[in-house]
Image (cartoon, rainbow, N blue to C red; front, side, top):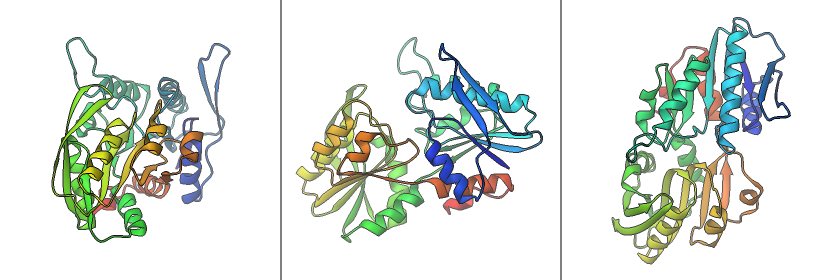
Length: 310
């Protein structure tokens, strides 16, 4: 087995390799003067089981292109099996036609990854389950729920916990964590007028005197999350924390979070933290390296991955 990384999230790749007591495969991922991507594998990979770790986060198109070129380089280097490990799968929110003459970009990206040479894909908390069906190759969608529940237990100071889904679409994800914590579940009913803008309409469930824990897969502009926190505090919650797998946090998102009633926003290192995120007093990052490393080991040894979440 070999582990290769591109440039999007090298610290996570190094942590995964360290967990597996391995060294990263020597490779050069660089740009020509006109910003074309060039990848050179500097080790023999013939007949090897190779895992390429690359989040397709900002700059999304550059990181996606790095992944595609690396896959092609490995295929032409006669790797036995190539697995694309994509902790954050970009374009996942474009998983259906949102209106006339609009693309389904998640399907396009799935086709590109397959055509480039991937034999298998590993992701973390896909935005929607149907994206798994966009791939004609095996896909393992991992869940951050075990990492989150362990952290919640370690940092919780109240017994009166309530897990809250910030929208109806995230109920399954929130219910899974509520079940692990043996906690109650509440749902926020919101109306989205346009992309990136949401308005909290109603809270389904009694959150008075409860320690509320918002659970979601992606935080981008943080508008929904901050509105939800304000609504929960107005409804009598003792405190509001949030656990979100992918901290995109674009634009003024960090400013919104630091100015919001959120006690804490916990994100994973599926996306590397920016300087603003690292300095924010109420944003904390936890690692998914052991989870990703264990899944990589199991795939390489042809063992069960789903049993990780039993």
